[in-house]
Length: 261
Image (cartoon, rainbow, N blue to C red; front, side):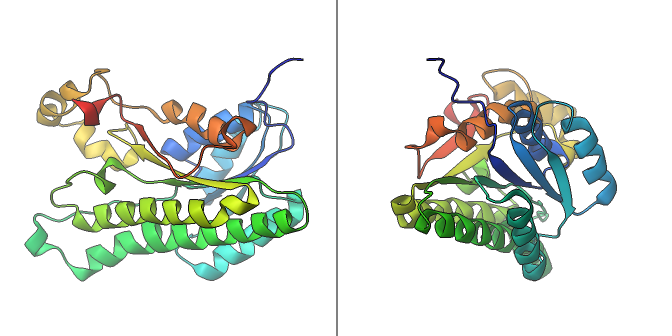
């Protein structure tokens, strides 16, 4: 019998912030592995471009919803619509995120704190809660299993100067994923965190164009380059597949070895 754990045919995957950056890298890999993929993003034009790009990669259906994950009612409505349209939710990747720091910690404002909190913490909470609700209901009906994933950051476990607000949300996300893993394991639902390092996305545009940052920081990455969105595709497929059905409560670092140097 052929071993094909990464063929996601029939599985339904929701990816928030899936229209650009790391999220799009995940979406493309999931689509190429034949999953049905639901993209959530705030910008309709980016959603449409992502669907056009990913829908040709596999045999599954790729659709996008315009969703602001910081709005609880939008998340509740969109998750219900996804479940109704596809009949189930097999994996949900809470990837939507923002990042805003300050010149120094003492100059950090409550506005900056709340800006990060709204999407990175509350948005992830709304998303994972609603996906988990769907999975638990399915498990109680006799069909257990599912995968919940939170895109955190190295900032959640290492010191991130001038980014305490952002780091707080990512550290909290890791803790939430661990708590979900222990509570939902009885339903065959696993929960894991992905921790990106320095990745070339819109969020890191300024650093990418900074020669000092390149020489002082990226030179310390053992793999000697910036990470790319496609570097997250394999992990998204693995965590959405049956190959990871006993893998839960983990923090999976994708940083080219930066945190080990």
